[in-house]
Image 1 (cartoon, rainbow, N blue to C red):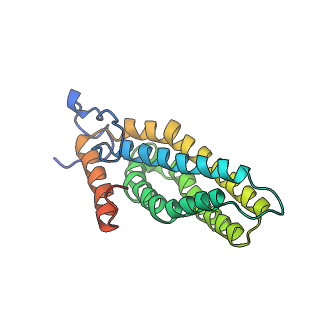
Image 2 (image 1 turned 30 degrees about the vertical axis):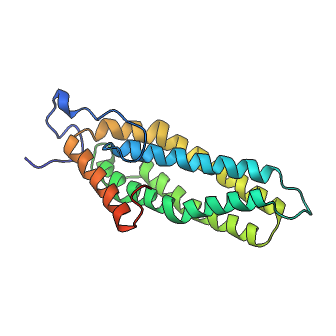
Image 3 (image 1 turned 90 degrees about the horizontal axis):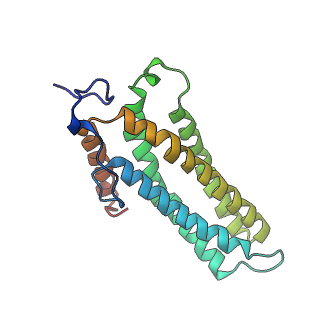
Length: 193
């Protein structure tokens, strides 16, 4: 029997429930990996927000602010593209096969993909403000980025992922998703990311 992503296509048994979400990225639960990445991003952005709050007009950028920007830009260049690929190449296509999304039209996944594009521009804006050594522009760019990511992550963690857990319950599908996410990190030589 071939497996399809949606739970209503898979045979139901007590073994089809999704595994409990352990913490950390080594989980066999793809949603635990996605949530762990979200927590890491929020932690880095929290430090960015705190560091840029100390900046004042006419003063040089502080070492703390520069370090926080550096950490943020590293995750936007390395970790977030892996995470976005996990969603756009692994999770979203499977969700689009499920009712009600298989009927076409605009989906929540389309909105999340639009956010991913906007996030890349926000990272570029953060880098530009840093290169310009403009404390107020850096504060604005950082605050906008932090607010947008918090909103985006909240939508995924509170709405999209719980819905996906209900739709994608087949253990074989979850194992495929986990394997794809792991392979992506092996290819990038970032297995612990």
